[in-house]
Length: 446
Image 1 (cartoon, rainbow, N blue to C red):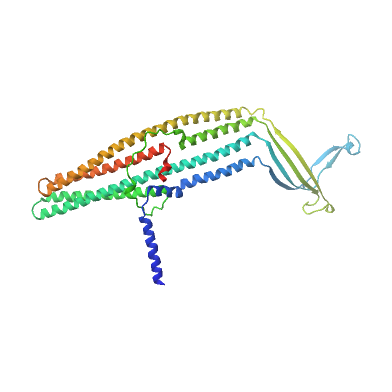
Image 2: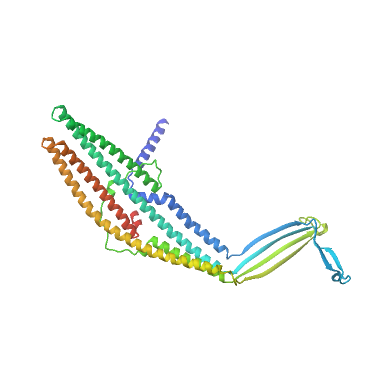
């Protein structure tokens, strides 16, 4: 039994380790974010909620039925002064009469049905348009999440590449330290040379710790953007960052971008809002009906009969209610003009958004071009710096050059490698902006 339990624990531990070591591709990160990030879940809840909004507006066009009841006790019944002639007495003589009973109870049903109300019909159309608005907003939310995840993903890659570079520099410097130390012990090198190497190793160790902290910070940011627990481990493969030329000849139709479509749908909602206000000029017509039971007597009516001195009667009514607005103190006109101003404002937003989207596409194209040139240049520079370092090492080991030249060559290689990594990051970030400007961020899921 103990052996079986041990096997199960080992299996679970191996499974968890396998999950942690599983490479996290950009597609995996985006998919995880779209399934787990709170922003995405909330935007989808808004789409679901829009169905309830439609039902709420539709309810205004359906019959409204309610039950009502009351129980009233009159300790002092109100007196009325009547002409006695109405009751066969002397005309002109006033008599005092208390009309009513000490107890009164009413129970009944009432119904109201809207026959014509322009605001209800407009509201129903606006509610359906609101659902479409939230669907577009959900799509925009997903695109924003994809953009944030992709940017954070590449930032982690760059910091990890910087860590690889600093580790390589540290290893090379340790090798040089071993050689210089041996030379010093054999009297072939000065103590100052060994001290310089030790100082450089200390500086590299400090830089490595700073980069290691930056890696952890970027990884935590990525986990937050995809909705992953902070304590989870991630493994990003280097093979996911190849530089591939983008199609730059196609000019995208910015009016199909989600940002633009969302504004257009908002414009449509403002038009419905204006129509809803204009509906205040229209008459409204409704049907109403009531059916009630009335109980009156000297005792509490509930549960009492005529033999107890309580009498019951029923009454009902059916009516048409027409309301024609004539003058509202110019309040409706003021609301209409406010709605018109809102429409004019959003038209300006549409123009500005289209201009901004066109600008983003052109800037992304320029950045792509510049990044490709920079990557090519920095790659050649890195190769050249490696050759210089190799030659300088050979010359130093043969005593043909100084330690200063060797350290300078090593620094030049480290700088070239970091510049190359930064160039790739700039390219990938520009690539995201280009894909975004073309409205194709979801292509990163393929």
